[in-house]
Length: 196
Image (cartoon, rainbow, N blue to C red; front, side, top):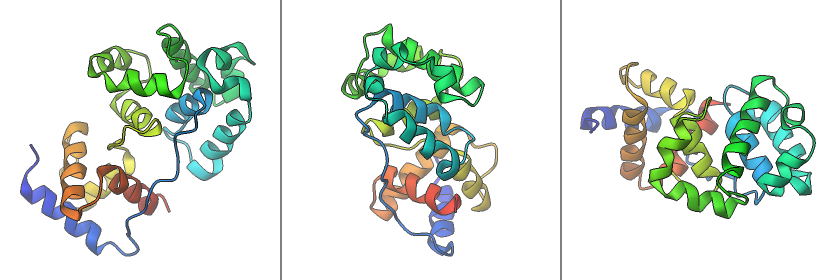
């Protein structure tokens, strides 16, 4: 459990941060597995406006990629996605879900809602806790996906740099409760402010 001291430090930092404001997320729920799986992987280390959004929009334009099997039966996923290892990671994730009969975002939402599935998903190469939480956000299971923006702002607020993923996730959830917003809204607001 994170300390009240951490919660106060982070809340105060955000309250006093010039230009910081709460913003409602405007992404996800594509009803398109190709776009969802691509975004879940591509968002790691790429610029959202310049790289991720155009890529996701291009994938969304492919009606056959709406389902997992349709996505896999079209042009080779690594070539379609690009970005070297990211394209291969998207294909690996698509094959993982295809093998489990996860064909639509509705299927994916139901599959991710069963916590027994998460350790199996985490065993997939290049899938970590952030990717899992990001996937959940994309299909409407809203929460916190701890990224470099959360980590950087937490350190700037005086939170130790060695704080774990789970500690930072709990911290954002606690600060969101203090601000009386959802953790999903606070997570997005931190990203939108920090990434500007």
